[in-house]
Amino acid sequence: MQKLLHNDSVFWVVKPQVGREGISGLGTLLSGAYIELQPGTKGSVPAQYPLLDSPPLASPDAKGIRILLESSKAGQLSPGDPVLFRGYRVGSVETSTFDTQKRRITYQLFINAPNDRLVTTNVRFWKDSGIAVDLTSAGMRVEMGSLSTLFGGGVSFDIPEGLDLGEPVANKTEYHLFDDQKSIQDSVFTEHIDYVMFFKDSVRGLQPGAPVEFRGIRLGTVGKVPFFIPGLKQRLNDDYRIPVEVRVEPQRLINQLGGDPNIRAHIDDLINRGLRGSLKTGNLVTGALYIDLDFYPKAPPRGKIQEFNGYPIIPTISGGLAQIQQRLMDALDKINNLPINPLLEQATSTLAQSEKTMQHVQTTLDNLNKITSSQSMQQLPADMQTTLRELNRSMQGFQPGSAAYNKMVADMQRLDQVLRELQPVLKTLNDKSNALVFEAKDKKDPQPKGAK
Image (cartoon, rainbow, N blue to C red; front, top):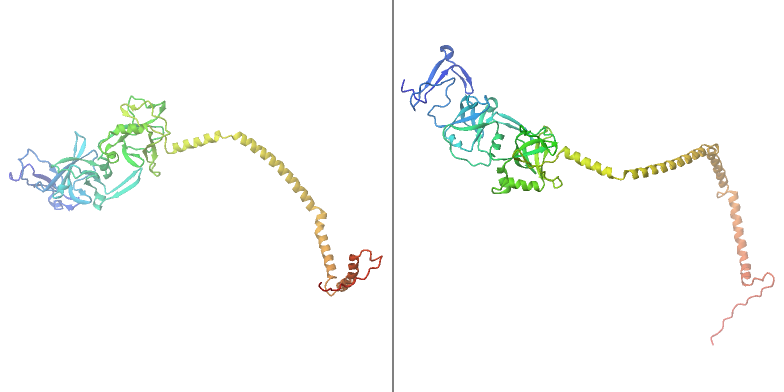
């Protein structure tokens, strides 16, 4: 028996169990529960051994690495839950214990060889609940894992984007267990410069962790909302505003600015050039807000108070609906400055003249109505119809073939004959106007003569 007992020997209770791997210990329904021993090979015999409720998932001499995860939330993982790397199972959760001194729960993971080489100094572990819904200012994001994690949960690990592979780690290295995959990306930016921003607008919808952006590029993260410090007055320029702590993360700016510049001096220079912060709506459905940094040349100059309890202050302006309201007020001010009274007086005079003109037009229409409604005007169509019938009857007497038409033609022929007979007389009178009193001499015909 002594050959079986070593420091790595394990004792557990065998009893009926229903787990992820199936049903085990059915034989104990007749024989009763008993204790089973897994012999060890290393170390001396300790004074006592812990008695486990379930058999170990891996033998003490199994090839691989054991990792410890710390979390402030209990019940996230259970023994037997899978450990995944990009969806591929590489190990299992062995135990979970609660440390009363640290007030934290510790999970022990075992990752089989050769997958243990995936665990390096730069990996991050997060709880894989199977389905994750994230509502942020960027919208709603839904992530779904495998079916095994969907029903039972598990833990995943990977290297965040932007980090190298890292170095191998020793056995039982401690890591922090993050709530979701999104949190591990934010954990990369460990360095930050804290600022305070005072907002006149409502901060309802602005949550810790919201992005701080400059024209769409993320520069930092919102820290505390609101950022009240006991014993300090939250009054700035005689105006009660809401302080918000923001964290500018230099590692996000290295790619944009290059090298390792003095971030605080650079931001101070930008503030002097008109850099201001404002609240913007990131999601109309959820009402989530984020902080937007941009240049406002017409903004009021930087105030005399530039620090708040050691935190540098980034000036702010009203944004979103408040900015629209300000523009409406500016438009109303322009309308108020217009010469409204002279325009109204001129419009009143024009309306009075138009009213007089309409009265004259109405009088004319009344007179016209009287004329058209008189009895003589009503009889006019009948009289005109009678006249037209008589004119038609008269015109029928002058149609070709009628007696009047034939007589008129004969008279015209006789008149033409008389005019022909009068032509010689008229010619004579034209030559000699007194031919009616004195006899006109006969005019001899001209005689042709020969050439000389």
